[in-house]
Length: 517
Ligand code: BES
Ligand code: ZN
Ligand code: ZN
Image (cartoon, rainbow, N blue to C red; front, side):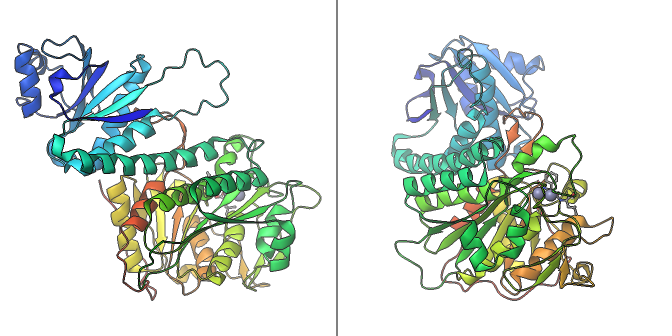
């Protein structure tokens, strides 16, 4: 989809559909719509008075051949209450408008930027919304004839002298949305089309395309290094594991900044292993590599946005299957860190592969660790499918990350990490056990297990089990992979204040904090 700018007078834009946001207000139209209203002989006011133009969030009114407009259609999209309207809402409005018009076969769209948001931020959000809204998981549909496509999306409502600034913002929006869609593509792949080896190949191709350094460790190398926890998970499958490492180095490094290690769970299929999952819903476990795909998407954007510090990604990729070679409940594994783990449930495999990946990231010099994983069903019990769970060992890191989540329009909620939970992960026979054996607090005890491997390094963990997959489509999004986490991480990294030492020292735990919106 082409994205262009239009700095002319909006009545003269020629194309299939012009989109404008309309705030929820009984008796007022914003200035630009007042202008269209008077050109059209009061059509908008009439609709408003008839109660058909409410401005309620994502409410759509599509008008054809509005007098005074060259555009064929005018789509008025509800922006909701003005005091709640910001960048996340604008991104959603653009995405929902595009999906609505696409379903009607519209091919060219102009989106009128709302007046009350700084122009560059608005242009970036609208670009992201358009590209994210346009995304479809249709790779495996062979009949493409009936598929409707938007050819061009135009950002309108700017002056000629804002053109350069808006162009740069559109460029950033494109990089970010394309990174998120890259992640979604990987997550939507079925496990027969995305084995650990294929995931590694896709990561390598992306790295070559965008100038990232890449290294893929095979089974032999993984064993030589001593990643016993990761290998134990991979053993049950005939498909060999891969450990994917991507590196970004800045052209001009800042004097003092952390080295970020992004660690993502890359289980391309999770059957549960010998502790097998029920058949119902097992097909969804192809998305158990969403954390890994998130980190690959972030790296794709980072290398184009050039922050002044090093960022590395680590994705341990394996299938969790059962076979005569698979690990069994009760087995004890020695992790790369040297810590021993009693595996009481082979379905708690994500934490095993992440344990070794976190240790390896530290070995390679990362001084700030962030991991993303579809780690636990328990996070779905705690937060449903709306918020991702955040667990952080560092207060400053947490604060910055939550601010980025809010700015990026991704809902995340901070969860507790009291030291007392660590007791529940101690084994009688080994250093740690991989499940607590308790009914409650499963997302927290899983995070505590990871924390034992992050040790003193500032660390933040994202549990995206409930948010990485949309069972039903939304007005602003196709069903399937959501790409959650990509925008927040990109925002966090590109807004990280450089020249500051990495955050240090653990925080008092269990202060529940989160983003409200
Ligand atoms: N991949 C699952 C977690 C998951 C659940 C992801 C639902 C997406 C949706 C993970 O490997 C797992 O199976 N966790 C177990 C842990 C349990 C055995 C302690 C779980 O959450 O049931
Ligand atoms: Zn599992
Ligand atoms: Zn899993």
